[in-house]
Amino acid sequence: MKKGDFIWVGSLIAIILLLVVPSTHKVFISATASHPYFVGFLKFAILATMGELLAGRIVGGNYKKHNGLIAKACVWGFLGIVITLIFNIYAAGVIAAQGKGLLLSGAPILFAFFTSAIMNLSFAPTMMAFHRFTDTFIDMKYEGKNPNISSVAKTIDWDSFVSFVIVKTIPLFWIPAHTITFLLPAEYRVLAAAFLSIALGAILAFAKRK
Image (tube, rainbow, N blue to C red; front, side, top):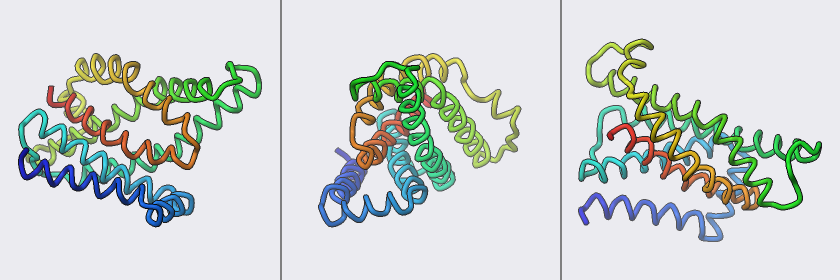
């Protein structure tokens, strides 16, 4: 293990301790309830960026601090705000649909699966494409280029994005992972989502480097 590995793992352990130690756990739950968007921004800005750094370590062999890291973290933070809202919208929507007999009901696993599947099949592709676009825009900007919508769209490997990120990771990873997430009590879903954001950052960064 390299020095960077110890720093990365140490940072993750510190975050876990903040979430599981009773006193700080209560503060986190309280802050999430009182300031959901702010906490959503922070958790994704930090943890998804850690995922990107991990992907760089796996692919390139080191934790490379690249230009635009802060800008990319801010994009992740924005997505954290959006995801905080989306989780609630889809959960409430599935409950309403089940109440009207539009979806099977009667067991928690059905609620969790339908929420995860519908969210990942409708919202996730758009969110991941938005991230890929902004990520590529930031890279091109810091490479000294003058990116615009057309040049960024042409630079992105959409074939790889669709064949790997959409076709493979959504059914094989995200739907099962979020099904488990939505089986948890509502107050703990945010914790699960926070750690899944590490995987999200790693998957999207890894896919981009393939």
